[in-house]
Structures are given as structure tokens and as C-alpha cells.
Length: 249
Image 1: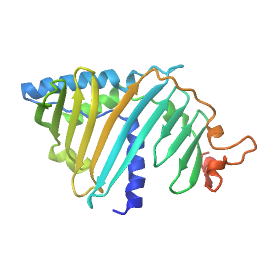
Image 2: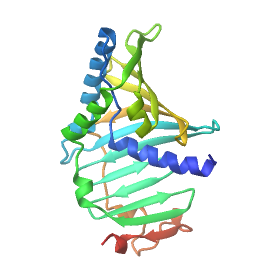
Image 3: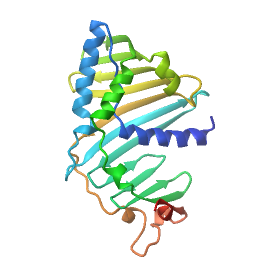
């Protein structure tokens, strides 16, 4: 995979990572089941579905490392802030400013600013019980390979999962490895391994911070990209503007 393609794919991965929590699976062994129950409790406490909206701001800080089959790795550090009416997404590959009316996407490597109308129905949709029920049903077919305690630190555990053949054919995931801390009640990282039919060999997500009540202020999305006279801010002066708002109607 060429470097440009993996960077674009990484931006998609980092955005999608915000919209869904880590994946988990049911198991048969007692040890594996105990690990899974711990993990599910931690995921439940830190899930975005616990975000109540209003004036509170949900914040997620994580990093993503994507490796292709030529062993080229691209890293991205991501910060997301979301309220009931705004969302900001920051990474090396792209920036998104979104409010109830408009979405501005800044792509530094391509030197492009993309503008579109906010899909209010999609923007206001919360990840609900149906999504988690569907995910759990899918992951019921997974198998726990191991659940180990990290040396010299009994609070950190590593849970390895194998995806069964039928789901694997659809999503190309063959294995997932989770590291979590039972004392801090935080997920540390998720490593996902793919089969060779997929463009990516491995994706590692490391979760740095999750907060349901972050101290963050939003402004109108346009003000982060354009000045008062409707001219691009100086840092984006040589960027191409792609306005899709007419096409959204």
C-alpha cells in the first residue's frame, strides 16, 4: 500500500473509532468469562452512550497506529470533543469542526477544506441499546485464547480473542487483543489483526483519556476556518475549498 493510501485509510479509521466503543466477546471458560465481565463493566462505565448531552462535553483522547502488509506504519494522535450540538475532531491527518448547521473538514496533507451541511438526524443519533445488542450477538461467536496478568503489575490484564470463521469472512478480523487496568477501570489498548484480504495488517488503538464532563468551549464551526470577511484564515490561505452544501440539499 502506498503511503498516501494508508494515511487516508488511517483518517477513516481514527474517525470511526470515535463512533463505536471497543469490541468484546462472550467465552466459555470460567477464567475467560471473569476477564470478559471485568472488561464489559469497564467499557460500560466509559462508553459514550453514558453521555447525557446538554452543556456537558464528552472528550476522548487516543492514538492509532496502522500497519499495512508492507509493514509501513502510520501513527495518529486523536482528540475528540462532543456536545449535544457540536463536535470537534483533531488528528495529524485531518480536523473536523461541526455544529448543528455545517461541517468543516480540514485535510492538511491535501491542502483542502471541505464544507458540507450537517445531517441533523445522523448527528443527533446516539449509540443505543440496539447497537450494543447487535455487537454482543456478533461477538458471541468469538473465542477467548488467553487472559493473562501482566508481570509485576496485577492490575493490568491482557485478553486475547479469536474471531470465528463466519464473521471473519465479513469483517476480515482474525484476532483482537485488549489490555485493561482493573484498578483505574480504564481500557489501555486494543490491537486488531486482519486477514490478508484486507488492506491493513494491524491497527493498535491506545486510549489516553475518556471524560463525560470535559472543560471545553465551542464556537461556530465557520470561525475556525474563515475570518470575518469570509476569507480563509492565514494558516489555510493556500487551501482549496470544496463546498458540498448545495449538493446536500
